[in-house]
Image 1 (cartoon, rainbow, N blue to C red):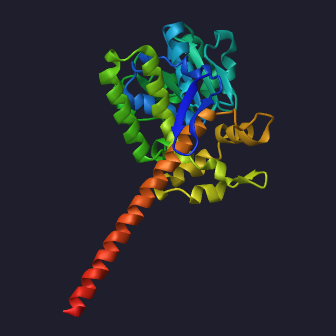
Image 2: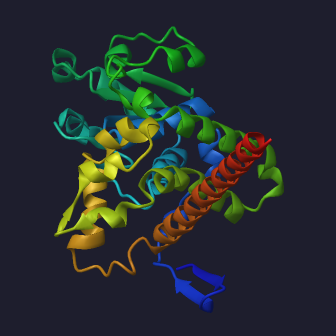
Length: 313
């Protein structure tokens, strides 16, 4: 795993040995950035929302690398549902499963999908199709009815019927979407001067920052052998409360809490990179809060002193 060297004024230099996590190595920045920024954010949001997602592409390698990349970007969380990077044509019945999944299908198998009568006769509004070769997101209903006349950009604004007001595209805080857009755009501009490893690390950091900002104090709310969900949500800014309302109910989040506190894993060894980032972020917040309080106190004292002088004269 990674080794982090930390120098503090209280205990001096010490070293953290991070858990070995191959997910950073599996991030393919080239394949990911071949998609538009809007599409990347919408796919990421759909995964967090635990939707049924089917990726379709021409090339096996590109398809598997892209799907693996999105799974890796969930760090420190994991996808707890069905995950098949390449689904053989003879097993396409899996897409009718009632639970969430992430599945990859080669375009050569599309005919099996469109010719599935059972699929046509059922309500599949909760399934989305991601065409990675054309940067297009469609509902499976649009796909099966041959509604392909819209352009790539049109599809980004005319999303599947499952994307209503209660879906992640609206629930994902605006501040997070803006941050992701800015960081991904910056990476596009600078990646030619970065090594592959640097690009992988930058992408991981960008997406992990969403979880750090929203969950940095999660450890403070696990006590009495339970995660105190409501108290945790109430400790956050109003702008991210709705996001945490649904995210903390997902199996993605619940699995993380179980691994961290309720299994035989040592909490000091699991997701240590994430915990270190959370601790650093929390310290920065506390410092900023302290500075704001100090600044307000100085202004208040100055105003009081000025008032006393006016009264004296």
